[in-house]
Image (cartoon, rainbow, N blue to C red; front, side, top):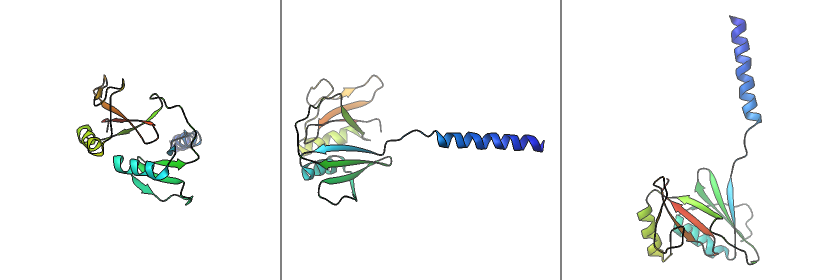
Length: 148
């Protein structure tokens, strides 16, 4: 009986060790290349109320924000080169109250629309999740949904 517990304990230890060794990679941050740091930092701060984090570079070209779930958004200013921006390439933030968020967008004068591009319209996914799309100051697409 004692021998069975030792064998079982060994199997459990090996199982735990194998999961540690084969851990998946995980996302830690999203970096967004911007033309004007202050303009973009103000946008993400005002629209989403993200808390600004201390950033290590201290060069006036970076701003870091806490975006929840132990993730951060890094805004990085660099010499601007025209880029192609497609709505299929977007980031998504979820909000607890879509109507309240839309009211905030209206107060800030920020246009929104559904996936096809109809201004002021809200998409309803087949699973009942509401979603809208906005652009940040550099033209990047952002999906906002209520899958909170």
